[in-house]
Image (cartoon, rainbow, N blue to C red):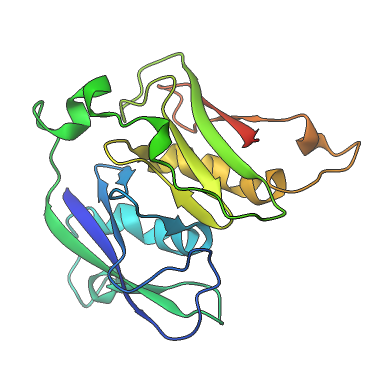
Length: 211
């Protein structure tokens, strides 16, 4: 497997995220875990377009180049036609889970929640998505208390932390609705927990608004 670096190569319109994605902004994927550099963020809608390619691009392709279209795919654009933010997917190096790496160093590598940026005034809610419990063996090494933030359209993961790609994908369909006012009788108004799809981990994420 390979570690991927995903970089904003260019913006051909006006990115409507707040703050907007800018050329040079990047994040990495290492063995199914997403990490964002200090102070960085990723637009949730852009990420949703990238995610189907990430798991394939992490791996060696056994098929001949003439038989598999994945060989020629290196760029993905955001689905917002106003922005046309184009990302480049590159293999940075072989994926590393060495015991001495930052991903394995446990609580010592986890930055405090105060690393989240200030929130400009907006009508929709900020959300914190936190690992509430782990009832099995999480292969991504997520622990209770690990969290990330959704502010506007942007996801923030503090430096030194990570979020499992598959757990994130389970939560993403709920997040835009949970940011907004829900009417009485809406089933989502009372639901705030999501179970990771991996039955070996039984990781439960809790979604809560930030005051």
